[in-house]
Length: 118
Image (tube, rainbow, N blue to C red; front, top):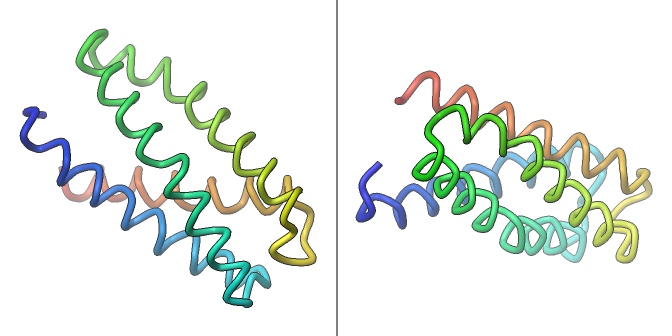
């Protein structure tokens, strides 16, 4: 990836994550405007950092470095989002389960996207 491609890549990743987690959250019972706003803000908080650090790992250590760093980055995003869900309770679901399912959905969507379009 070239440096000038980074902003478009980050926006694409954030957009896909917002759509995926917003839809998955809605299906899991996060139907209020407040709840969807919490899901959206959680993604704005974590996704750019995960994507940019993933790109940095790839740049510095190659694809192997990316795949080694990815579990750490995803676990950190899961923990941060679960903490926000626990404090703000956007739906009647368990906050850890909600964070795990939403992050799992967006992670799998991103994997499929990268396999199909790159």
